[in-house]
Amino acid sequence: MAQAAYNDQTMSRQAMKAELLDAETELALAYAWRDQRDEAALHRLITAYMRLAISMASKFRRYGAPMNDLIQEASLGLMKAAEKFDPDRGVRFSTYAVWWIKASIQEYVMRNWSLVRTGSTSSQKALFFNLRRVQAKLEREASQRGEELDSHQLRARIAVEIGVPLQDVDMMDGRLSGSDYSLNATQSAEDEGREWIDALEDEGMQAADRVEDDHDRAHLRNWLLGAMQELNERERFIVRERKLRDEGRTLESLGEELGLSKERVRQLEAAAFAKLRRSLETRSREVHHFL
Image 1: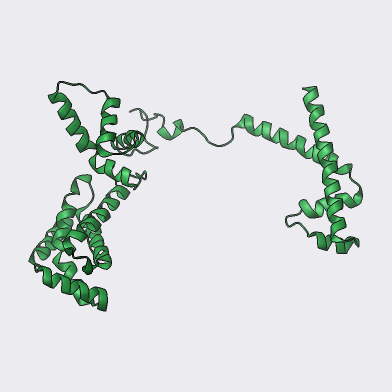
Image 2: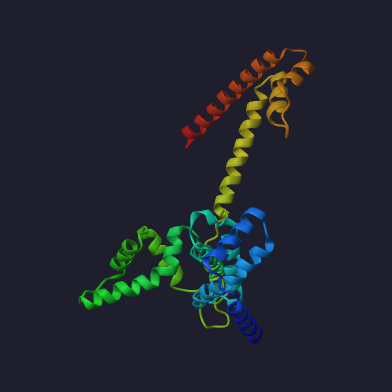
C-alpha cells in the first residue's frame, strides 16, 4: 500500500513538471506524429497531458480501484486519443483526449467492479456512473415539494432523467445494491450451516426425467430394430451405410458396390425410408390406442 502511494505521488509530481503546450506547438506535434510517425513528438504530446489523465483518474477512486491501475487506464486512453486525433479538425488535443481518457477509465471500472459482468452499453454506463447521484437529486427535490416517492416511482423518474429503459434501471439498481458474495458462504452463523451453493437449482436432468428418457429411448430403439427387420436385405444395407455409420456413404459408392446406378440407389433408399416411416407410425398409433 505504501509503495502504491509512493508511485502515485511520484507519477503526479512528474506529470506536474511536464511542459504546458501552447496551441501552435501542440498542433505541430500532432502533425509530426500523424504524418511522419515521429515517436519523439508523440512522447512529448503524451507527457504534456499526463496531468490531465491523472486528474481524471483521481475522480474514479471512489469505485475502489487502485490509483495505479486507474492512471494506467487513463494513459491508455490518452494514447488512443493521440493515435486517432486529426489536427485538421481545428480542435485542441486536450478537448479530444478527455473523451478517450474517460471512456478507458470507465471501461476498466465497470470491468473490475464486480465478478459478475456489469455490461458496457451506453445505457448501462450512464446508469452505473449516474444512478445514485440522480436518485439522490430526485429524492431531494421530492422532499422539498413534500412528496413521497415509492421505489417504483423513483426508478421510473430515474429512467426518464437519464434517458434509459426502466428495466435497465431495475437491473442496475439491483447490481449496485450489494457486493459479490461467495457461494460457499454459509447461510447462517452456525458452523455447520448450509452453503448458498446448495440452494442453487440443479439445471441437469433429474433422476425421474432420466429414467423416463432412458425408457423412451429403449422403446424407440426396439421400434427401429423391428422396423428394420421389415426391410429386405438390400434396403437394410442401404439404410445402414447411408444413415447409421459415423460417415455415411455416397449414393455413387453404394451403386458401384451393388452394381446399380446412383439414381436407382436413391429410389431404393426413398422406398426403404417410406417403409420405416409407416412401420413406426403404426407402432406409435398402437401405443396411443393402448394408453
